Image 1 (cartoon, helix red, strand yellow):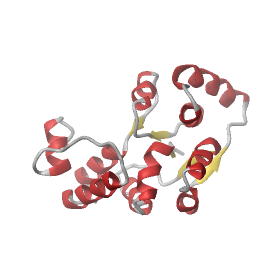
Image 2 (cartoon, helix red, strand yellow; image 1 turned 30 degrees about the vertical axis):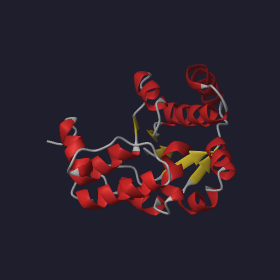
Image 3 (cartoon, one colour; image 1 turned 90 degrees about the vertical axis):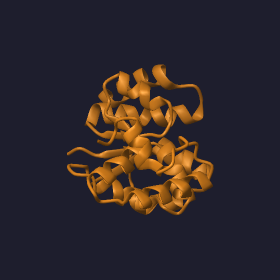
Length: 175
């Protein structure tokens, strides 16, 4: 079974904006999307330090890396992305996804590293654009969601007039 596996960067601002349930429901509503969402213990530690895990806990299953294969993958990912406390969480998410076939949701530059090394990895804006494409989220709803994230300090692209849909069309993400 394919699973969404969430990094703290994708959860943090949605939880801080009290919109995590909206983000997770939107992700589940994308055609052929996973219905199961999980994260790793190190991501839980990061969200706990930021006072946000209590918002996330009801929505996510927590996994640990336990098998030899998962621990080997963790070693490889730590070498690729580790530069401090937060990168270790990313590495656990990537290792779990590599071994277990999950789709990573991450909102920082490490997403490109994951993609370059063969993982399926997307960010919050991708989820919103896919939901617009599937007609399960309106452009206005996506724009409001983005504004709520920005209000918590999320660093997101500045959209042209027309919001996220115009931005996605400009980048060729929507026809």
